[in-house]
Length: 189
Image 1 (spheres, rainbow, N blue to C red):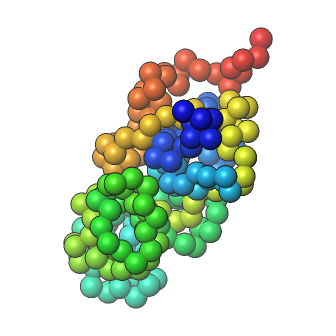
Image 2: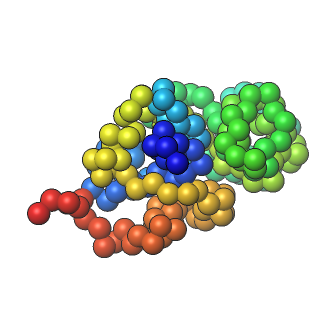
């Protein structure tokens, strides 16, 4: 496998090391949706906002939403474009604006998916987020080299089913890492 392919982090979790103090990413798990030579894009999956989907429905004038759809939590997906909504979902489906991450998982930014969720006709599993996390060319690779992040294969159970406050440790546990045993001083004698 060439280094070019080895560095691709699509469909991986990016787990903040305990010493990463950036408030946008402290104790965060980010799902990497796209990673190429231009940079990387992901959604933080464990930062619930004090907001439910019903508030977004009101804002975009969807007034027919089912009660269970209105109660869905909304997450802060990252520091970039926090006024834009994104739906991370499984299965992929056929929506107007979807970035395919895997054969099963996509991230959609078009209103048609919210319309379907409001009617209880949306994807089987979804996570709603405002904003995203983005990195420029080479930036994420440098941050990983600087021990800011752990990365490893994503897991749909953690993406969609694990409680938000357990996702950080659960994602690290997939790699066999106990974050309680790590300090921010890794590699510094």
